[in-house]
Length: 244
Image (cartoon, rainbow, N blue to C red; front, top):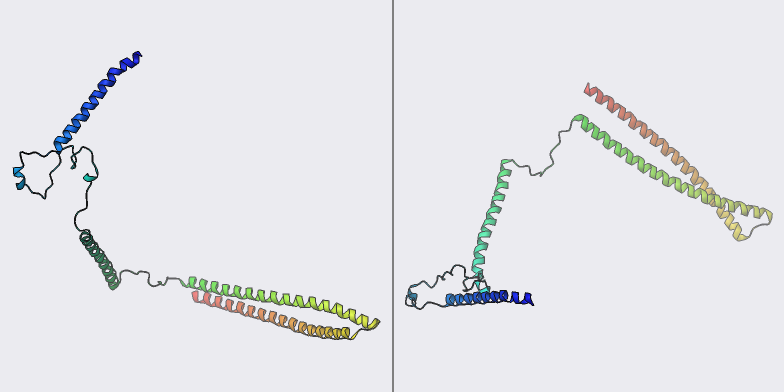
């Protein structure tokens, strides 16, 4: 209770000061917003285009706090202002383009900039050119050898498959021949036996031709390889002679 009694004067003095301050602010605003009557006769002499400057500490609306009316407002024709700015920007852009095109044309006419339009010839030495040529020949030879290996693998696979089928057919042919010797065969089995015999003879003929072709192909490859080695040695000898 004693605390409440002691705090009461403090609160009363605070409320009195606040109400006095608010009243003083209200009176000041009213006086600032009220137009003076003594200078009404000289209003015709002032320039209406110039807005009166607000007092220090006040906004154009007359208060001490800014409101929406105090914010800047756009004035004049927007399109006219926009066209004026664009005319300036277009002039700057056009002048820049003309400057760039003129600089490039002047440089090309003087022969200064290369612009990397063409590939310059690199000053390779004779040894480097010979090394490039040998590398190209080596790559070409490796490509041919790779193709030959692939072809050899394909031929070997075909020969293996046909030999396996011929072996199976031969087993069937032997079985039918043994049956014919023992108890005889029917017409269908006899026709099958004749067909198997013809297929065996055709395979044997093809196998001989295929082995002969593979042998000749191997001899041809060895001959080409020897000729290349001979040409390479002659070329190296000629190059060594030219260097001397």
